[in-house]
Image 1 (tube, rainbow, N blue to C red):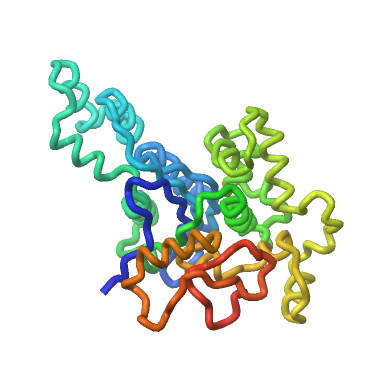
Image 2: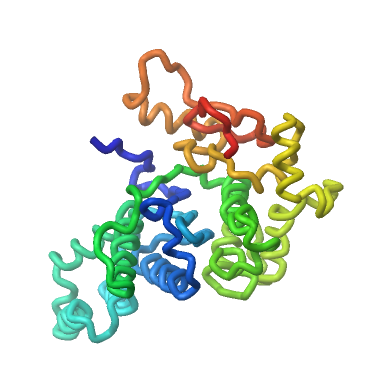
Length: 324
């Protein structure tokens, strides 16, 4: 039996770090045209569902998405038609039905409206439809059949607080650096940071949502985020200090890492921690899902062992090494 994922109630804004892997760990996403198709579908699905992509990273055998889901707004018939037309196309049967219904004065039919709204502002529906649509496209393109994804997607509930979201976003954008594909995520065009650096408005809005500036100067927004990716101003870190091999050796020797160094490692808390944020946030999630834990457990918040994030807590304590 599947264990329900940790989700906020529909009337609360929630941020999720979602991960999905290709079956068997195969590198089916390695080719650029394949990543481009997934990237395109992700943005279209986001616009239709009303799920904000804060940032993302599309790798060769898996992908990460950091998404913000807000409570469902009251959509007018015109707004519903616009989303449907952008997603399905202006000449799609469902688009024409809604347009005709509005034209004759009846508005979008209740049954159709209900079906569409059930697919919006829900992380589970967003991820399910994205993966299904991509599977159909990929199988048709490569003349294959069967499942494409190894498992249902994993998700970590992230506190929607600027410093927490910024840390997780940087961890996600550094995936191609961690994999040795590039030295700077700005040079990897299948991540949110690279899209923002190129001036893509939705990507900039995602970063702007946690950088803490709304000045409209995208270079300033991206530049401020870059401090998290590479080094906090005044930290004294050099490029040598950010070399992966040096960081791994420092970790194995049980040396002290900076936050900028740590997020270049594969931190299991950010992938498997169930919930991540301040102690108060994690305790609130624990109390809400208290029935899913054993009677001996008294508290929810757990520290991130050997990690330089004293302000962060996680819901799941990892018994093995927090770094892979």
